[in-house]
Image (cartoon, rainbow, N blue to C red; front, side):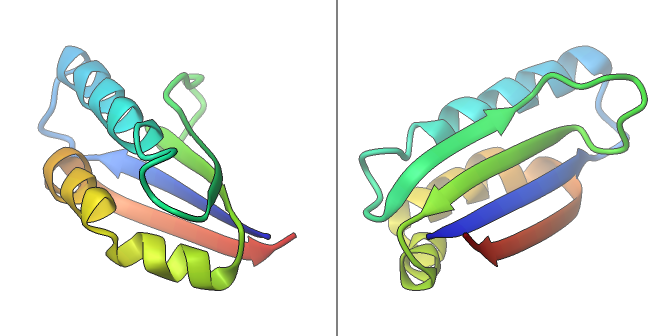
Length: 100
């Protein structure tokens, strides 16, 4: 199995209320991919953060294999969520993929 963890920092131009809405949209969009994209074992988005955080939210996901993760990255359902709910609002993306 493979873990796929992403930390995002949202653009500075958004108010706290806008960021809350954006985080919720990202959470609903990505978690909604479970059962639609083959190879996802688990997918969770953490939107709660302490003031000491340097990122706004985190994706914590597990895939059956590296090939399943690669297929996920190109899957139309994932691309649609990424293009509409994530990429327009993010200024920094950090990713760590590793085998379990």
